[in-house]
Length: 381
Image (cartoon, rainbow, N blue to C red):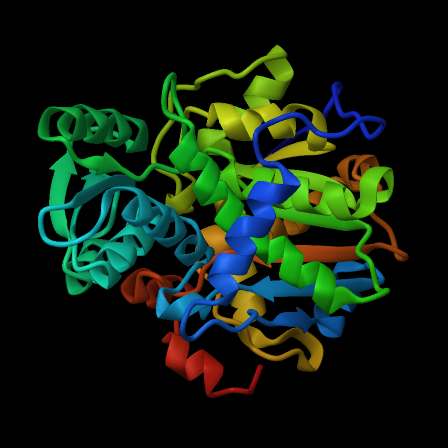
């Protein structure tokens, strides 16, 4: 397999000052407290993977598994639904209230789930690359679907136009001029992932955190939480994107937020975004240590590796977007210079953020060669 990967050490990374941006400790804490009070809340597991660590040549590997988050299959359950909750407190609920969102799949499920809890209407915009399986999962939650020609960024713009014309409430995970409060709430919800992880790791602090990014919301939220907890001694923060949609890496390279034309639809469907969120970029511009863009070719091996349970590790069901971090590690193994540039070695303790499970079972089965149920039957988490 060719080593198709791009890397940029962030020239503006700064550990000497507090991170800028609107995602303050108070805003994050408010979201975390609210979500911990939701019915059915439980921290998602942090899984030790000694077999994978040995295979990768690092000291330890851990996987924060978001597949079971509130039964929605991904970390996105934390963001959209929390933003809906805040909007309900402000504007009320009921059938006369409509929440609208553009999505690659997972964010829309969270918004639709939140709207359902509020007995309200959800209109979800899907671009051409969203699979029928992910559309079906949205319909189960009662969402009305609008298909949009083009890519994710096109669906965001169409959603915003229609919402303005119909007096709907947009619940987006990306921001634009005059629209910041709701995306801030979405990101604040995501920060709970890092807060839980910090509680779970105890004294075994990771040296590296690898986090995938689309528009950058979850990466920025986790970066802010880790930096708040550990200051300048926070783990090395590596943002991973698909090569076909590396808008954050390109922004870092250009020295400012940069929209990129998508070169195609990546298999990591949840990360298929060409326009970084301004709120996320405010944090990642100084908070991320490295940006990595990885080719789709590394995704199937990563998914199968986790499903197999390397060296006695528990099997893990991870979707295409959920293995971006591990895909980057597999790719870096083929480039010793990059492995070294990332500061990886036998003493490294690597934290991988598993953002989704098998959110489209048909795609998962086709890639892994087994159903998620068959994978989990091979062992317990």
